[in-house]
Amino acid sequence: MAQALFVLVLVTLFNSSFQQAGRIRLVGGSGAHEGRVEVRRSTSSYNYWGTVCDDRFDMNDARVVCRMLGYSGASAVRGSAYYGRGSGSIYMDELSCTGTESSLFDCSYNGWGVHDCSHSEDVGVVCHTSFGTTPRPTPTPDNGIKHPYNNK
Image (cartoon, rainbow, N blue to C red; front, top):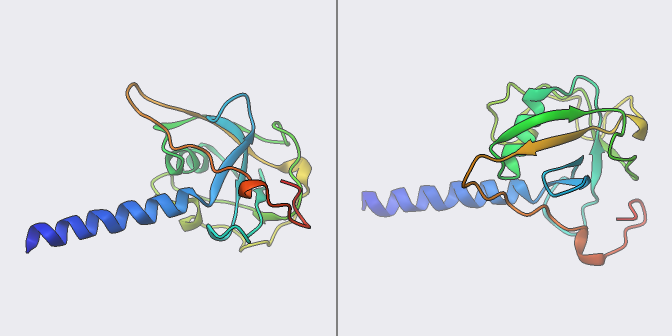
């Protein structure tokens, strides 16, 4: 009985972590390990991708982003739309992670869609892996579905 409960807890944690990873992606980099940070409210294809503002975004925030995507850590934060300006909404601003959170959505921020930014302040990150670590693939842009506010 204890073994079955342990397996159930592990499956629940893995499933929750995988679902959270489907809510974040990196766009515009030279590979899957880097790019502009984009997030969405849920994993439903009807939720639009939006960007994260670079205000107060630091290496603690970048570590959480990279860990959500299956990387071992972060090596750089790139502000001022380094990977290009996003389109559509800006969903997160004034992020303040400790670096230990399992999800960016567990960090403190102004509130979903509450910001004082423009897309010239979209943040990007560079993630790195340690030997033997396989990162999760970055989610694709909604399987080719065109959205009215986000041409992704």
